[in-house]
Image (cartoon, rainbow, N blue to C red; front, side, top):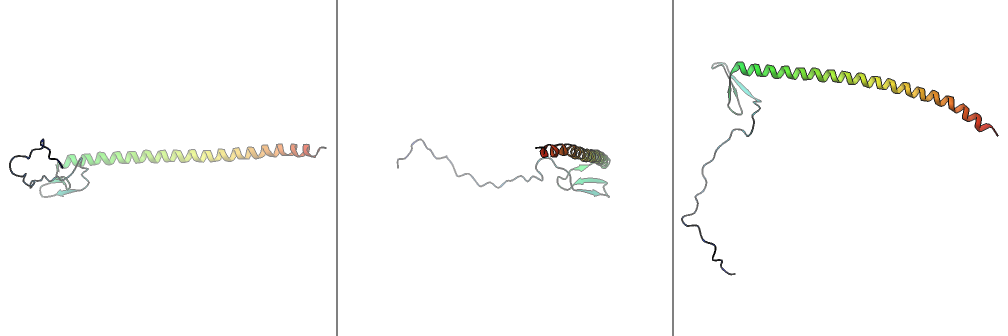
Amino acid sequence: MTQDTNIRLFPGAEIPEQTLSVEKKHLGFCQHEKITLDSHNRTVRCVACDQVFDPFNFLLNEVARLQDAWERHRMVRQDLSDLIDRVDALKKEEARLKARIKTAKAKVEPAFSVRSREP
């Protein structure tokens, strides 16, 4: 093996081992799924990210979120009811059309049976 003369050693001592670290409580956006209420200090705090909320603003946001969820639930229920009505109407229409087809076939079949008997 030939020795490469373009490679040089880094001057000085070796790099010391990394001993510092930064601890992150959460990554990205916290959903504040678990909160604690401090009745003595009258505060609301997120368990995951330690953010302290104004109690009234927190309650106002939660009420708005719940109202939105109930409104969406009502809309979905109404849409479901409308779709059920449409399916029932389609089933009735299908039964009506099948009956018409059966009646039409009954009218046509005697004509075919009479013609097939003719010599």
